[in-house]
Image (tube, rainbow, N blue to C red; front, top):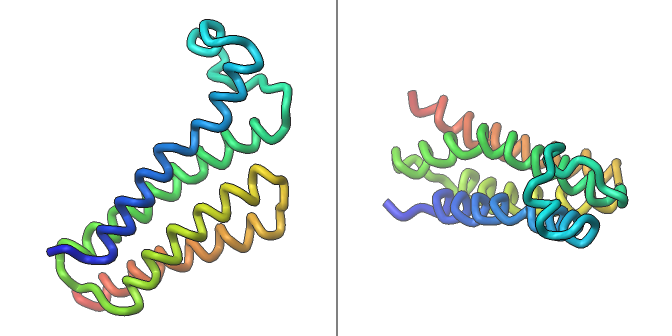
Length: 133
């Protein structure tokens, strides 16, 4: 039951779990370790716009993972993988990585395009599941 969808889902989960590092390191550098760990605002008061965008990009990645993960899991566990779903899983990973980079860099048009690509990958996998019902 080892599918490409489950492999790329795992990589996507690990990547998403690491996306907080740039902005928390910025916060530590900005206010110090103790203040960053006890910040009642949750790190929202950055002195650099990129760090605020990184926090928002991370939140967006988590929000989209909540939708992508179940369909990727179901495709893998139900063993209904196709070339299209395998490709969608790979493209989703790189689209979400690019989305984070473009969001942090403040490149809105490319951020939107990479978001849409990731969304499309999720839809491809969901359609595959619906076609097996």
